[in-house]
Image: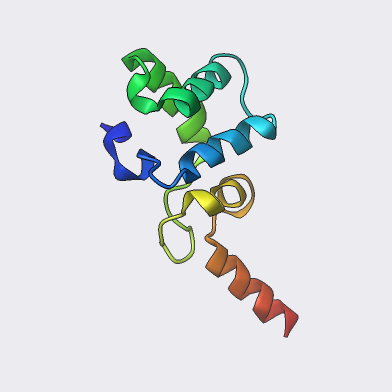
Amino acid sequence: MWWEDSKYNDEDGTFTDYLKQLIDMGHLEEAALGITEDVIKSGLNSLSNEQKRVFKKYVIDQFTVSKCKRCNDEITWIEMYDAANEHGECSSCVYNDLRKNKF
């Protein structure tokens, strides 16, 4: 199942930080907001199957990008907000573009 993927285990706290960022920026509403708050507080394993389905549909599927659309590297949680909401690229590709355009 998708929630068993190691990227969601949040050992370093970056997944939780990303979820908090989505809340702080006003992206989540209603059930998605409440379920996300539960994930932050108690983790994905605390959710029922129905809650996991809603969380995937309204949070994971809408606000995450698994790979950079340019180099195909995995997008980390630290760079997820910009990648998912703006350009779909990892920070290395964005930096390389900025560098090329500056010089």
